[in-house]
Image (cartoon, rainbow, N blue to C red):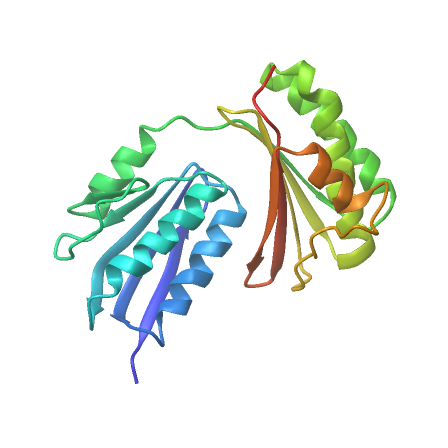
Length: 233
């Protein structure tokens, strides 16, 4: 039986995942779970240290390509891979380094996205707290014209977690080059369904209509639901 150990050494602002052991179809899921947990915190970059990995076949490139595409889609974090003895795919979103020290140095040179985070109880009053945090964040980020939209998205994402997840939740509002990202992480392992034609007037139907894009991702202890505005005005 193959053995693989994934250790998340840090989460923010750079996520660092150290992997050791044999990477194959039975163990690659552990890397995927660790990556999802890190991406849910919206790091500015992900360093994947594969120095201690043995890959039993040629599928490592495909696995890494999928991980890089996931990270690039949301939250837009580049994947920096430390693996001197492994042939890596030459794709956008993946950069190879000889060792973790070099990868971490390159990640540290990237811009750090300003963010605001708050942990909230599963109560209706949390929606107002989320709106206030989101509005103030837009002022602090220098994008006041996005405040009304971001306040509304924060409120609807929080309300969705309060009504359906019913667990403690964490809201993060983050400034990006394209606008503002919002994410609500909770402890409910059921992903939301895309709004249908019978959905009217609120919740994720409103998020879908107003956000530039939105989505969700499972984590080891629940899920994260995110929304992204369009370009900042």
